[in-house]
Image 1 (cartoon, rainbow, N blue to C red):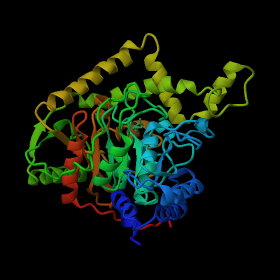
Image 2 (cartoon, helix red, strand yellow; image 1 turned 180 degrees about the vertical axis):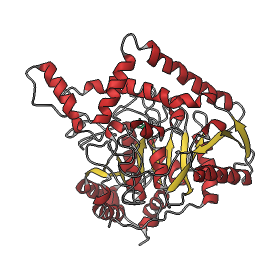
Image 3 (cartoon, protein in one colour; image 1 turned 30 degrees about the vertical axis):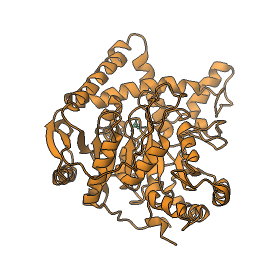
Image 4 (cartoon, protein in one colour; image 1 turned 90 degrees about the vertical axis):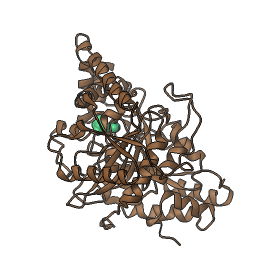
Length: 485
Ligand code: GLN
């Protein structure tokens, strides 16, 4: 039997298709790994009995022709799964069992995948370290004392630790790319509207996007192909033909023009990240790409803009959690209003409350123009910067994050320093364009570092190809022991 801990998603697909291994064997392998991995706290819910039943069924009667035939997968606990608890990392949804399936997860099951369980995440996907989850923090497999990033921290941790051959996350301001960078994995935030938001617990609807998190670029292309597609249930879904990203993958990037934005050279950026960026530039040059200096002058406003737009939308989206329609209800209170207040006071964690307060404030009459409206205008300027650059270049190369994985507890008392970790990822969400993070090296403490490739809307194939080409030259290797077993 091949060593499944060394196998990529694409390899597992091939092994199952050629009957070298059964879905049941693969499923059992990952269940065994998950059971030994409690210390990482990457799962909120597991559904092993169901997974095994489905794997057995697949081996006798399953359709081998799907993109993910009989492949067990765990997903972020922000995707609604019919009949299976979906918490969004919050006490307020602790016992919420959806009666419907999200379009994206449904797309995976249609391609033959099997659900292993639901992965930990920051509460309502608000965070950069997976420390705001009501179900406890997730640990980075790289080392006991490191966060895996967030908000898709459970996804990144489970993937790096081989509890699932691939996974999906959501990215509102960096939540796929930053944890991918912190764990030495690949993460892609698609163009806004490429993957349906239907059935994903909403955080900030004009920014939220689901995307793949995988061990390599080939897997990333395959999973994006499986999960994306038009959905009439999402009014912002793009109606276009499905693409075969994995079939069209190519390392030929000769002649492509890659922009290097000077504004991403931020103050106090560690030398190692600067060097890593330089290494990425050299690799691209060697592959025949042309490097061009570019400017994205409004970059410095991206973070403050995001931290107005995202909380504003969150405060509106989270109004539905009132103890009546969903999940948790407080037993305290003499009347309906008090019941609402106590439910929300007891059900939400501190970071979520902070966002609701900010969001309500920036939307309130008298402040709306000064904050929310202004932020929307600046958002347009940020998008214009990208549009202008993409008239002359094919893609942009930047670091994924301004630091490697930080220590558990290091930033929990300082929200601003936590927010600053999103500095390189947030502009992409504001512009609605796609970006991929690939592992590109380690810092001097052995922690992984990622590089980000950005393109204009709907050019996922281009950034996948650039990443595919770079991956070959970087030949990144994970360098940790399975200390948690
Ligand atoms: N870290 C950012 C935030 O806390 C982004 C989160 C995300 O992309 N879901 O809002």
